[in-house]
Image (cartoon, rainbow, N blue to C red):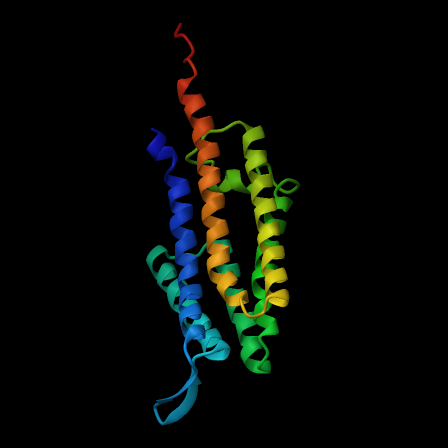
Length: 211
């Protein structure tokens, strides 16, 4: 029973790693020493921030396109991530300025925080309950705490990405990939521990006597 109830959490972890695939490819290309590459008679530089940005755009389209073909849909968060890659990545390449890309992670995280916060005032359930409530049965007070935790997480992630991007410019790509991944993994583990405690309490509670 506990394993079944943890399926949404496991799905969230898998989804997070799928979302990080384009970022990992972005990181690999960014770390390469720039070198000329000729494709179909056209020569361009491969390696560095701008070819890495192009890789981020292409890999995002491929990854989310594959998810869409498999599931016949994308979640709203995936649409937001994809559109953000296209917009901020496209602006980075069009204006040849990495400043646009530096704003991508903060803006996306803060939009997620806004969506979770708005669910406290719009609709009859907070967003985390809409996502996981079909498989996990918890009191409304616990759902509210979880939702507030997600709001805080996205606010902190956005602020951390913004601070590092414009303060430690030599390390912002490393943090964008591995710092964000690390924070996400730690938060999901903490959420799993918190859920396990309450699910264990629910399973241990005595059942009502039958008439």
